[in-house]
Length: 137
Image (cartoon, rainbow, N blue to C red; front, side, top):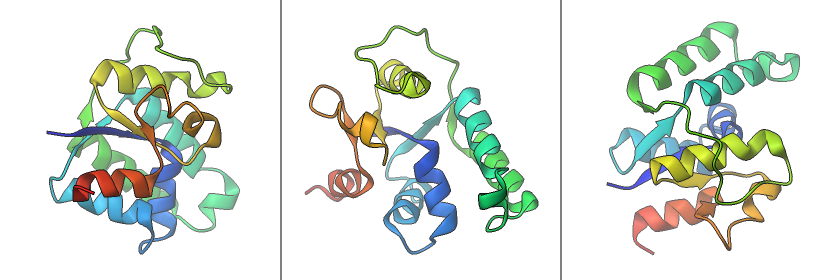
């Protein structure tokens, strides 16, 4: 089965725009098209971001909490991987996502240009490209 780590920015986009490509990707996960890999660090980052006032105005505290708990219960929650990286991001705060994807043998799906810039060396894809992979394109 295909496996993917979704950058918290993708998960947030799925919540904000239920008809957008990130929401379609989450629907593909829910339909069993791939296994979603998360870690406690990823979930903590997601919780923190969802509490920002700019996002809280669009996603209620209850909805944010329910979403994170749903991910915790439904996704493959993996132990934090060692910080051994196949490559580093220009943003060191994203290195844990690279480590998680590498240790889980999963693609990393992101909208972050720093991470996408590593896509020639690592399986890091934008949302639409991963949707195309799932569709067999």
